[in-house]
Amino acid sequence: AVATPTLVSEILRLKKERNAVILAHNYQSKEIQEIADFVGDSLGLAYHAKETDADVIAFCGVHFMAETAKIVNPTKTVILPDADAGCSLEQSCPGPQLEAFLKANAEKNYYVIAYINCSAHVKALSDCICTSGNAVKIVNAAPQDRPILFVPDQNLGSWVMEQTGRKMDLWKGACYVHVEFTRDSIQAIKDEYPDAAVVAHPECTYAVRVLADVVCSTEKMVHYCQASEASTFIIVTESGMLHRLEREVPGKRFIPGPTGHCACADCRYMKMNTLQKLHDSLRDLTPQVNMPEDIRARAEKPILRMLELSR
Ligand code: 13P
Ligand code: SF4
Image (cartoon, rainbow, N blue to C red; front, side, top):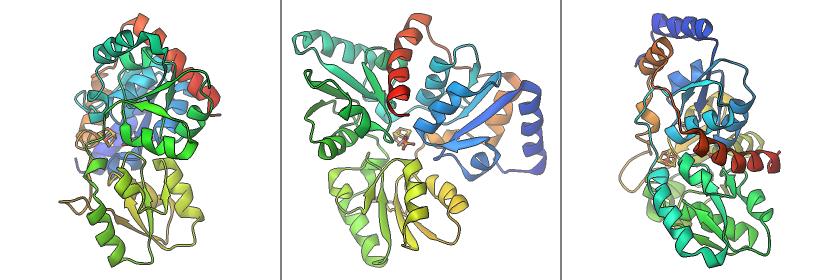
């Protein structure tokens, strides 16, 4: 939706009336990032969701992120502007399938580390959650005497293995957006901008990660580009990240990493949220994110372990 002054002021009025906080992920549209109280990565958003004293959390991101907010702050009303904003990583690891796998492999006594991009059911089956921002720390802190099962992202999992030297069994999930970057598409843009630094998300494949100057979470991308001496960066992640970088790192140039068939990469789930839907959800307090209390309580433990370990 176009950010007309009326729509923006109506959202701000409703936000006040509802005593709501607007949290937005780095992949949201420019208009949503501009109206949000806080814009960040999955880890920063989880901390904010836990600590807010607002009555309503309007979560502009995807379903698992809003669900995480509800898990750690259950007395709040959590709304997601579009209830269909899912995630291909979450879909790649259905709870019942993980449950059956763990049962069939009970003798292994796996320590399960789940990337936060998963359902509450999967979180409830896990020992610790991680995000791309703290995955190395979380894996380093895992017990040495148990094998690790890492779910659901095999690319993040193999990157963490490279970083830590710790062997893990990997679930075969992937982000449909990040696997679209190819060795050829990134090499071609590097050739076009030979002085640019290449910044990639760990959900990219190994063939792409090896071409990058740095591999990190979306939040760390901001810090890296601020501190780097380079003046041009090729950003190999979802296109929304460029708005955040342009806002917080002025005077530098950001080029979106092209995929095998597109000049930049959009996550169709992240882009389902619009200003109009945000407005309507604040007005109607729907769609709300809820889950059975037993799942919530079980899912909360590994999230709290993560928040504690990554402080
Ligand atoms: P970050 O934790 O780096 O924000 O990544 C979230 C995500 O969905 C990446 O595709
Ligand atoms: Fe999920 Fe990939 Fe979209 Fe992130 S970019 S929300 S991992 S589908």
